[in-house]
Length: 165
Image (cartoon, rainbow, N blue to C red):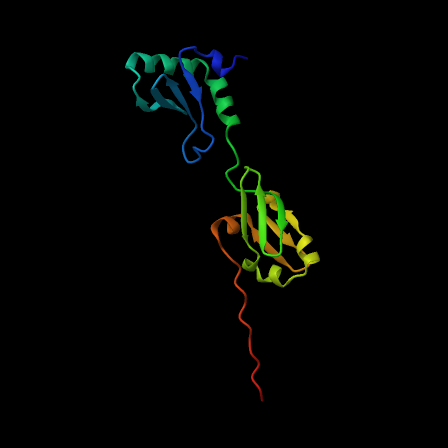
């Protein structure tokens, strides 16, 4: 099976894995010119500099190599949901390494249960839901990856005061 580089010596075909909210597409460039083609159906989305003749040539290359291009495009697709790979807790910070290479941290004080927990209780956790969150069984605490990214601290329940008789 040929590679994308073998499709044409004149053009460079490439994909952006973070074009998450757009239909499947391919970018094509040569020198300072660039275009974008949707793959379903094959249609020109944007063009900066290519002539109509060159665009027709690019379209034909995409049509005749659609399977290779779609396969290459799919290999760049990533799971856009942030997922925790590793977790570390210090006396002041919760640090999460995400599968996409980012590291995020939030103050330990964002979780009153973890703040009140012992070091041993904090160290006993499970990454749950394939990385969408973390659970501490000994203190019944759960923190989501999304909550850490969006800055959503846990609210401590209000204490109910007993009325004296």
